[in-house]
Length: 211
Image (cartoon, rainbow, N blue to C red; front, side, top):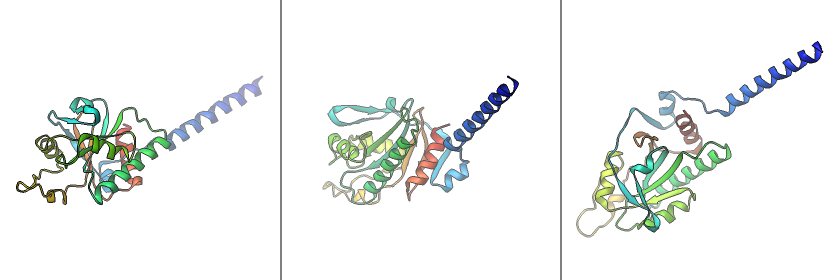
């Protein structure tokens, strides 16, 4: 009986050690502020509150500040006719989502939002369809330019008005190509800066949103 008892104790000990080891391997490591920065994420020491906003998605569905509550939000500002930067960045975010799913990383409190910086041409239906072309969980939204400028300025993204009355759209050429991170309190938490690749995005995103 003593031998069987000792074997059982040893087996339980080994199982416990293995469980802790596997948990350590699979749990994202908390990176320091400097490590996050090196890997492309500038995290504010104190998140910045933002004011109320309202955007529209397909079927007239509203997306406003209340929709940020309780969720980590990746927000990107782009437009459907963007030739290079937008589709490249959206593709990297879609790869991030895929990697997180494969790792079974908790996504119930995560969301991905594309805000149009070309509301004169991008209808809510257009931008939502474009966003979902990269991943079904994306939400695409649009609204009139004053609302866009209000939010974009707060998030240091884009505050350029079209020049003249002919809306030549040249103001879209140099839009800031950052990915915005908003925390579950709806505050501006940080900025992912280009160049983007899924390995760095995954590393920094998991480190911040798993704590």
